Amino acid sequence: MAMPGICEELAKVLSRVQRPGDFFASGRLELLPPRLNVDGVGQIALPLLPVQAAQLIALAERAPHGRGAATVVDTRVRRTWQIGPDRVRLDGKRWQATLDRAVALAAEGLGVDEPVSAELYKLLIYDKGSFFVSHRDTEKEPGMFATLVLALPSQSSGGELVVHHKEREARLDLANDDPSEMAFAAFYADCVHEVLPITAGCRATLIYNLIRKSKGSASGPPSYERETVHAKALLEEWGNSKTGREDGVPEKVVYPLEHAYSLAELEFARLKGVDAAVAALLKSAAPQAGCDLHLALVSIEESGSAEDTGSYRSRYRGYDDDDEFEAGDVTSASSI
Image 1 (cartoon, one colour):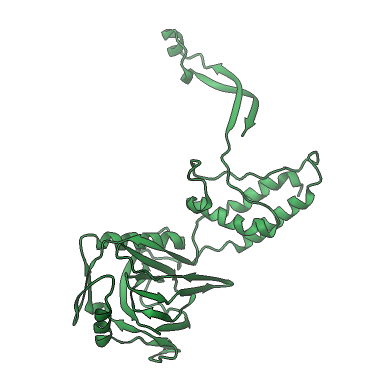
Image 2 (cartoon, rainbow, N blue to C red; image 1 turned 90 degrees about the vertical axis):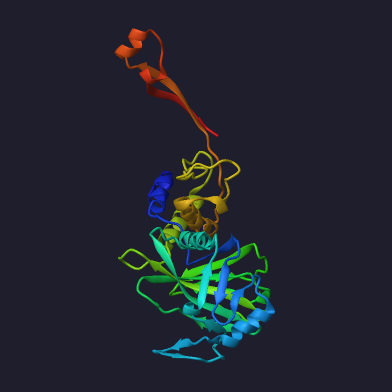
């Protein structure tokens, strides 16, 4: 491959990147506290009060875990409390909208662009010392592809959620005592994950199964490992071929984004859709190839001749109209 073709070759590689997303998603949502009622306790105040946490634990049961085909309780593996969805009621003026927003953000972060629903699985109570060692979730119902965790406002610390996928690890902090917001995290069901010990206080989390509404192949996190390796090789070859300004090798490689951005919006964290996916690939490949990666606004100006279409309307009215002209040859072009 001749090096002047770096732009074309890289464009072919990046054109295969079709959707953004990762093996996990996390963030915080503005929250108008819902009415949370639990049979046997009544309405639960948020942030969770220590006295109500004790009441919830008193009627809860130890959460089990899977061991082969069996389900067992072993506090050396999992130490937390659970309350089934049949005993939990959630409502309130804004709750459904808040839940829908959490599901939408989780699906977007996971790279899922098909309809997704959320089914409440359990209310979990983590008191001081609670934890869950590394494990994988099982498919709890047809169509389930991921787990959504909503951490309700609680006074607690520790208890980070650690999610692993291949060689990568994400450590997510769900601690939050602000009544006006809720932390959330989602991850694909086949990801190994663990909950580190709660070091103080008590935390309440709602666990939802994320379910694909459409039938078809199972959803999975986008993976562009082959494209990343190919892009890295192209960039390395390009860099190694640079000998001077007159060698015919481009000084810079520019890849146009799909969306338009203002100067204020132009940062990696704000890229949208496929742009975000392409940027994530290049942020991995470029440093490995010894290349710098930047976002920039480019303005292109062209000048040349315009040709009169000679339409009857233009001649009859006796005036010039831009719509009556077509662009001719471009005689000069510049970019900034």
